[in-house]
Image 1 (cartoon, rainbow, N blue to C red):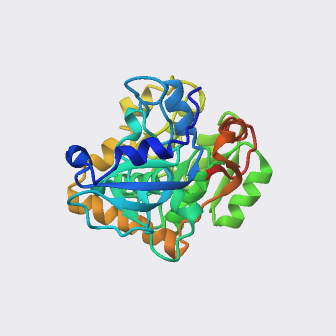
Image 2: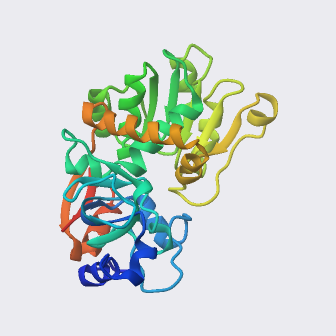
Length: 333
């Protein structure tokens, strides 16, 4: 495991804007003092090499795909943010090359930053990128009409809970698959329309057909893979799209060939960075501002768990990877 670092002196020296030899490298860049970062499954899978989100050129390197901090200063040509202003990365442009957010300071392109308005908590802002933007992006891709059903697995996850919230806000009904009844009760209280308790998806297709009057769900999002994927594909309508956005149970998934062959079910992947990179600049900027507004309005709320000092990253990872862990573990400091 790559350890988190506290590299205040190194980053400050690298960002000495009084040094004329550094002016080129820091042009239009901003020095950010990071203060809060979540420990996401995507962080851990990226470090393990399962997800392509962390590809350092050399070691040691610093993981961490997202986080929140305040502006220290801006380099030549950067004037959008003021010292002390809270910002997040969408994403920070250095994280994939091994200069991630599990450290105290980070230098980022001004164009990669989004300002955090008053009314958005530090905890919500720190979790802005990975989950809320993914939820909004998948719903935009699927374009589920109001009143129709979206099916999702791992509905008790932080992302799953936010999917329930945003779908409800858009008038979309949800069928949510979980493993434990106590989670089902929590999701119903959150606004889930239907919750199916199933360990491996047994009976999911039949239950979805019952809920939808025989039609099947309009679309689905899936992050587990393995055997449950076949049930999900059979639980949607003809010509539906199933987006797979994770690989929680491994890197393979099963499905019944007649679903795509005879019923036209489409299977597609959703990966956040290629999706946002594909958007025109103005559309991408609007999406970021819209998601931040959803956080400000409380439409999407974080599901936060324990906080750990930055130097206790190993303990935070242990909690983040434990069963029934509750809310998101956060690294502070």
